[in-house]
Image (cartoon, rainbow, N blue to C red):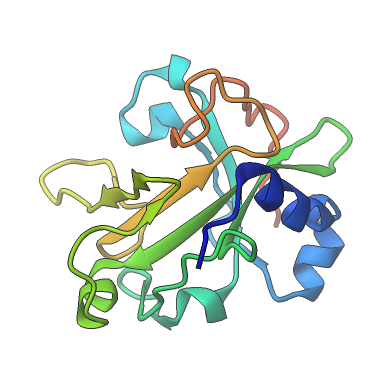
Length: 176
């Protein structure tokens, strides 16, 4: 099976510009309601942000949420990504800026996969928390591989770079 092009991913996910479509299809907001910025992960502030993550628990194969999110998901289809990223706007709306897929390391290798998952020839990033630091490098998830694809917002650092300097969380309001 051929991988979709970036334009095909953009076209397939344009419908999620309307957050209500995403919600109707089973995406839920990160329960911690965090708008991710590079500085929160110990990265330089100029790297920018990721925004707010909305994800599909079924595509991630979530099996546990405590003490960390864990699952059996090995879903890597970017035409139906497991994660959508949004930037909060001044008027309270959300703007779709990127898509992401995430697979849990144990599940990926248990499914017989040898190397890291890839998209367009680029390996997914390997994310694992270092318990010796105060930061949570894996964002409250068990060890996983993930790949961000900036098809809805230009990223001067590259379409596959996790953080985007063109993303801001200045309009993020924590929901009660």
